[in-house]
Every structure is written in C-alpha cells, then in structure tokens.
Length: 600
Image (cartoon, rainbow, N blue to C red; front, side):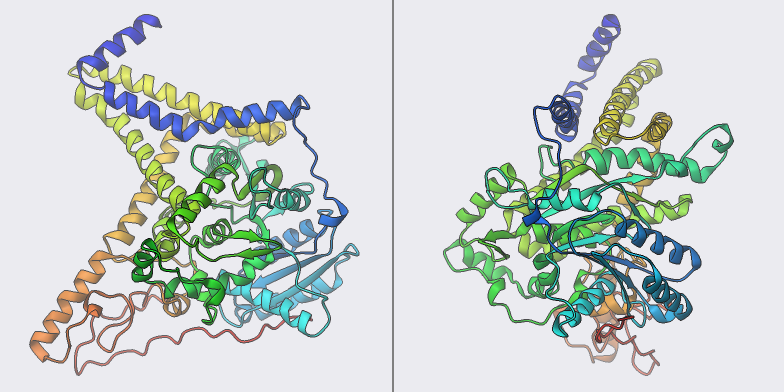
C-alpha cells in the first residue's frame, strides 16, 4: 500500500494534480468535520460525562399546537393523515396539545373531508389532547392551509373556547409518524438556554428517518425498484438530515426539516407580516445603514400580512431563516435589524458560537419517500433548486441579519465547491494522465476515499440515532451511493437552478398558480426576461403602443404581458406578450383568505 501511495503521489505531482488533491482534501474536511465531533459527543453521553435526559420540567410544559398541512385527494392520504394524528396524540406530550389537520382544498373531495371530521370527533384521545380539522375551500398551498389552521385557533381564543394561543408551534408532514416522545424531546431542546447567549433556542429540527419496512429486506425484495429507492433515501437521510442537522459543522445549519420542526408560536404568528416586510425593503435603506442611518424596523411596520409569499418550495427553510434571524428581548422575540453593521457583526459571532437551531437525534419522525424514479427526481428538483428562490426573496433581510446571511452564502458556496470537486475527481485523472491504467488507479483511490467518508458518516448516524438492526440494512446501498448522489442530487440541482437563473423559471406544483401570482414574488429567469424585452421592443416598433420602462425586463403582469407564473400549474400557457387585436384569456383570480371553517 505504501508503494501504491508513493506512486500515485509522485504521479499526481508530475501531472500537476497536487493542488487539486489539496483543494479536494480541504473541501472534504470542511464538509465532513462534524463526523468526529458528533461521535465524540455521543461517546461522552454514553460514558455519562454529558446528560442524556430530555424530560420537561413542570414550568416548561407549555401548551403546543401541531399543524399537519396536506392534500386530501384519495384514500391513501386520508389513512396517512389519520395515522399521523394518532401518532401525535399517543406521543405522551406532557402539556396541553392541539392537533390541527389543515386540508389544502377541502372541496376537492368533500366526502373525504367529512369522513375526516367524523373520525376526529370519534377518536379516543388523552385528556390533554384535542383534534381539529380545517380546510381551505380550494387548493391554495401548504403555507395558506397552515395559516388557515392558525386562524381557526385564533377564532377559538377570541370566542373564549381557548384560553390563549399555544406557546409552542410544531409543523409536521401528514404522511409521517412520530418516534417515542419526539414532541417532548424537541420541546426540551427548544427551552434549553444556550450557554453563551443565555436565552432559549429559536427552532429545533427532528431526525427524519425512512421506515425500514419500506427498504430492501431479504432476497425477495431485491427485485423491487421501489424498495431500492427507499433504501438509498434511507441512507441519505441518515447522513444529510440526521448527521447533517447536528449543527456541529464549520458552517451553522440553516435548514430545519419540514417533516417535523418545533419553534415558538410568536415566531410563526409574525411570519406572514414579515413576508410582506421583506418586500418593502430597499437597497437605499441598506446603504444608509452603513453610514449611520437607522434601518427599517419590523416592529414599526404596519403592512398587511402576505401569507402567499411564504408559499412554494423551501417553506421550511423560510421559517428556519426567520427563526434564526430573531433575538430574545426579555420574554419577547424581536425581529428588528441590528442598529449598525458593528451590531450585526456581534450578533453573527454570538449566533456562531451559540447557535439558535438545535437538533436531537432521538426526536425521530418516520416519513414517506417517492417510490418511482420520476417522482423522486421531481422532488429533488424542487428541493435542490429552492435555495435560489429562497435567497432571492430573503436577500434584503440577509444583508442586515448576518447571523443567518453569512452561513447561508458560505454553505451555498461550499456545496457548489464540494460538488465541483466531486465532478472534477471523476474527470481530472483521465485528462491529466497519459495512460488509462494510471487514471483508473487514481479514480479507484478517490472512490475508495469517498466510500470511506460515506461509510463513516452512515455508521456514526446509525449509532447516534440508536437505530435498530433493521435500519442497518441501508448500508447495502453504499456502493452505489455516488451514482445515486449524481442522479438524484447533483443533476436535479443543476437542472432546476439553471432554469431558475438562466432559463424561464423552474415550475413546480408545490403551490398553485393563483397563489404564486398573488405572492408578489418573481424569479430571476434571465431567458424569460430577455424574451419579454425583445418581444415588447418588436411591439413598440410595429404598433408604437408600449412605453419604455423597467417592466420590459420584468416578471409580473402588465397590460402588455401576462405574469411569468401564468401556465405553471394550469397547463394553459398564454403568449409571452399580448398583441393588439388578438383575443386574450383572462388571468386567474388571486386566492382570497376567508375565515377558517372547521368541525368546531
């Protein structure tokens, strides 16, 4: 082995690959340094050096609400929602607990909605648990369905049927089931005071696992593509969501899992108004902030809430960034910007050492995964390209809140660098070496190192998650994990990001078109904007009825152009520019937010 390493090192030096190998090693260490830290912390707990308990003290047994936003279009979704709510009710949370099913579009299947209401009234529940079922009339998006449930609880408070709005807020996927005492463990983490800041955490994320019963198990399941996909996803979740959310890496974690997270209700209740506040910010105010002017204050903002601007892919990331942007002022959570850049720098250092996001490996939730390659690929396009849209709509705030802005930008650049190194590692040997045998040898060595890192991360995640033996079957997917990463992570990320940055925008069905139109948001989509400008220029020359303006390169609806979102979910795409004397179809009406309707 020493001779092989000597030969490869000499060959790499001769062909100028040492700088590349050095850069790859640095990227790998930056990306995976948390493996050793997480293992050390786990060993310390096993040795009794650090505490393992997670039992809420009586004064911290706050009232809580768990919202489960979902569609309800078939029997499978009905059954999954009932199992999810039942797992919440039986999770032994020690305080008052409201469980709210938030149906996105109850009129799509009124029969299922009625059955869900009847089931919630007949289900036997612990004394501290209550079920509620609410729903928007038509499909509006996950974010609006959640807000509908929140408005329902506000009505109960106003009517005197509820003493006050619950203190803690849990968001949970409706196709998931909780592990033992997951809610209490997360509430315990949320209420702990951070060592340096001496204030509680802002948000806690869960350990998301795939049910091992869906994975490969025995010879008979080896021919099942769905089981193999579930096995690949199960191993990926162990490292990316279990180990990856431990928040012990060089860059702070800035994403909570949408499968289950816990935060303070006062954070969520201010989120719709903050979404509108984001759209009121201007770069002029930010430049003035640098020379001593006071920044805009959210506490003084009087704009109407805009729930639609929270909708779409990355809504869990949206909430995480809001939570990590906040600071405690006594017992109140404040979202105002730092007074000066120096204060912003101090907040960033404090949040780096004493991180507002926490994670508990034993706060587990079992979730579903797409069982077809097409479904999984579409899901990953939505997930892996949402970062561009999130940064775009959040950037004015990230420029003030450096405690979240800095790690978001740094971690995004690191992900790009690591994936670039991964691709370069596959290509560089074949370009640098004259002999194929040398290229193959270096590629095999690099692949062995990659597999070792993947194996180490998976083993540590299995240990700290205290997984049963059935979860260890995920290791069978390890030899092909590199191929899986390329197909279901790298390619969807490149494809979706390219469409959003350089193309015509990445359409998804995560939020209906009417909601995205009403959100006030746009996409970068340079090709779309360039095409609009060219066609408007043609109309201006031929007909002379289009004045010059920035809308030529815009995205929103104008008298001469449709909205860039038109046709994304309806399938009816209007022309990019309206031409005179040509009939046009009326754009869909934006969604309204009437008061919540429920079973009472």
